[in-house]
Image (cartoon, rainbow, N blue to C red; front, top):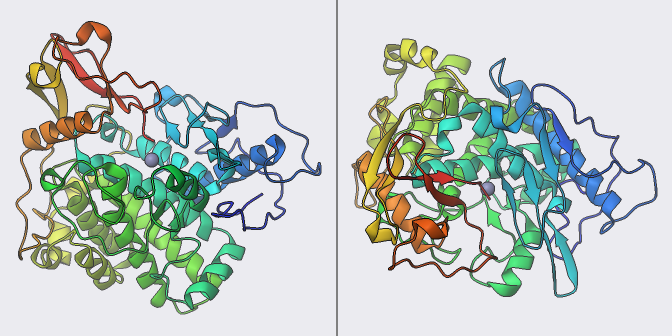
Length: 463
Ligand SMILES: [Zn+2]
């Protein structure tokens, strides 16, 4: 199998791994297609090879997150006991998680068949969505650009940490970066081959050498203030684009923790990746879902470090999130040990896998603006902020986060401006703006509200 990705020019060399175990706790997985005979001579581009690449990546992603999550964590109830992967879900350059499984698409571009399931990083990204959904189900329907972007960052971090789980990859990455993990490397460059394929048709929509690179300098802006889309060289409120602010900081955190390890070798890097992953899991379990969600998760990583490591990595965490503007200087300095202790009881009460709607508040908007016949209910992020922290204002100081209603309506407007909402025929007004292109992935739909009158915006999938 491939260890991380086929590579832009399929330059990565397949290696032999033991037959992966899929049915392992706490995150059992399965593959819909029939199991090929292991040991047969197979190579890239064959269905058997794709099966084993996907199986190995599913297994490694489960092994990455399993030891880090609270005991008792399991997939979202709609997923069922095992998360099932469908390796040939149709013609597209994409993959998604939809609470019924992981779906991987494929398309032939310039004579090369690019199957999303043949990239371990794409598979591990999908697993990341499923793991975060298990930990924080309310993020699924939260009408919030930052909540959606944190999901995308978690997916890319899942790919990063799963790659760094392999000793061979740690050796490659340490050689490539000469030990400075902040630099671009095979682990920081996510999905080189899928990026190549997308670039052939949309040259400005992905990085020059991969889909997204965690080695970046994107600085936080309140997504409410950002355009809904833009070239890959800029940051927009589109969740994959905006996710790079957080995943970029996370790579710096891994790099910083590694610098502090006694053994600055492959073992030390394994340790650094594990420590950083643990702080992130602790943070997403405890951080309330609020406007300014990145800042909350970052603040809770600093708090988790006090609880787990006595604050050993606090300076590294602060530095990384400050460099990406996720916390302002003032906000980062405000999370001190006494401040964390003051909130300890409240944080201990946070339970993973709470209800889908917990912490969200219903906001109703006029349907007419969106070409929809009835009012639409959105689920706005409305928990109470902890630590009172927020991101950097580029002009200096701390940004004032938008209110939950503004976050939710801005999110809905952006979804429509990107044509990502499926509106069934019966809910379209005379002024509907639906181009009907069947090939565009609609991540959301307008559906009859479960809670009573009118319609609601619900998510179909994360891609
Ligand atoms: Zn995704």
